[in-house]
Length: 380
Image (cartoon, rainbow, N blue to C red; front, side):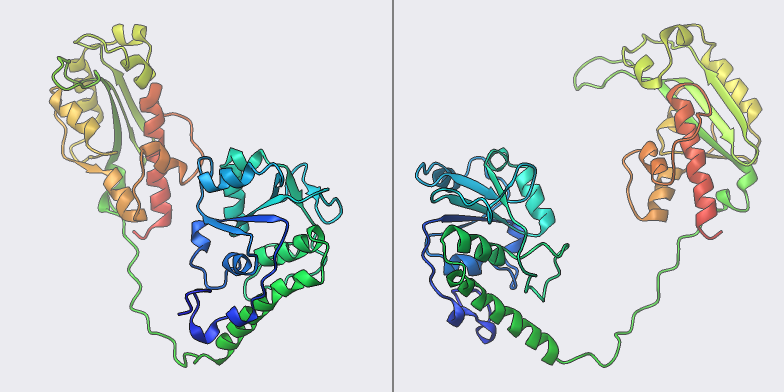
């Protein structure tokens, strides 16, 4: 490896580098992802410009070297980056020497760096329309008007230093690098045979609860009167106050609100989206259990998002058959974890009308949306 250009000796471009002193102070801010790119041009430009500085990073608000460069009153700083209010530096040349700050990276990376650094946004901005197409034949630019970092410096320094022809020497190592890269691509051995791939993994299949026994599937959601848990603090146990369910195949719905038996948590009305008057006027929890027992059938399969709702139902005295966890099923089907039921439903479509009061009705609608999407998408 060449320690100067940091490329393999066989493709070193150092013999093409010319030293080009400038009155302009060039400060190149390179995105970290560009630092190790063998076909990048920021290091190449810094090797050609003895009065330049090359720094690598993303956050520049407290960077001492940059602050020192920007504080040079004899060479006021400007940012070479297009944007609102940017002056055409090729047509409106500054009256004296300047400190030219250049951001090196892909256009997406460069935009992010400028956006996230107020110290760069505060600088006067310069831009230009390239007078000739880019010669960067080994890396596609997103627009014909875009050029590499070293090409941009060639155009701008040629005007600022009053020597457009002389600064075309910046392109000598650039062209050498491009030519060597294209030669390597053209002469490297080509694979004659395609690599054999293993068998594709079988698409996950739906459980019987969503296929042959779909008529028995009952989705449920429970809401609680729950106090925030704090270590070493007395708090009431969670208690069931709202239970909603739907038999997905037929659309039959169940909903029951139970009055809290303990003190009402200050968060319950907000989280469950049920006002205190509705909770206070509700029936007993025993009546809820009796009503749901009458709604269900011995063959029903209870389904919920996670275990909290069904476990809460049982802990408060209700009898509930083992349930299937639709959250675990979702993770297996899409091979991805979702933060919440609402996030999972949003990934398959827009929210639907609630199937009951409060948050329970919204969450029940989201469960049905997921079940119907899975049945339409995955093998049965």
